[in-house]
Image (cartoon, rainbow, N blue to C red; front, top):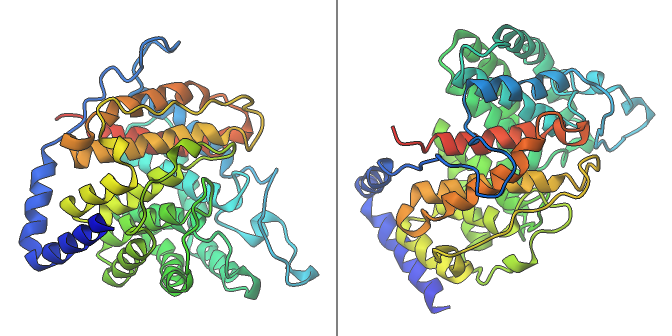
Length: 387
């Protein structure tokens, strides 16, 4: 409890420093970067480092390209108002009907945009552009809005799918390509609706959801925070900051030894850390971690990779996703605060190395979504390579 009050004092002091202090902190960390050489730990079968280069991009892009128009099998997650509400996936979701479920379709589109932006010479660039234009037409997005406006759709994809929709919008907004700007404009009305849903819902959520699957509150806050920060949406940003601190500021002794759960693709403890490193200033975050998960600062900290027993089981293969999501959080911590968390980059490498060889060529249970998690984790690593 004493440390909790110290965190509060740090927050008060930080809020008084103004923009100059924020600028100083950013400058202090901008020059710190991760070296992703030697990504594979000794003893693993794969002999080459996992680097997100053009060769890997050409392989990974096949996963979203092959699934965004694959309508069946499909998990609609729909609450029916009546029998008239029934419809085929492409009728209910004209933009995001493939890849087994709505959120996977959304982040498959994010994957396409992200890879095309990073690798303009990617082999399937024309197929990617055509697929994006076909999906993200203004008419199709209006069809998605119509679904969200249904009386029984208030909690649809809350907040996991919402989070990925904002991530897709963020990726389009920062794409300096005429088509990217066109698609950004098409998607914006749906994004505005999702933003409003966040702002309306979060104040009513009395307690955070601390699980390792879709409804994890911290994950939903984190993706939304990145969008709000990139677009300078102050109203959303303040809502997210307030609720993150309301939910997590008093937390301590996260039971990380309870992880992973059998179906986890997110770490409840690390997801919480990922949002708090964004919303707390440096000193306050350091004090908070000392209460919440102090072993993370230990240079000898270990976290065993999550092992998958059956990759044809749609739930058990979640654990590959957990390895990727752990990795991107470790990379983020090591980049932002290298003095305290730089040692975590080797742990991130181990997690990627275990699951990455199984992404391409995997069964549809994993193939329809794991590519996105791999891309996001490798992107976090690549962003930290020394220039």
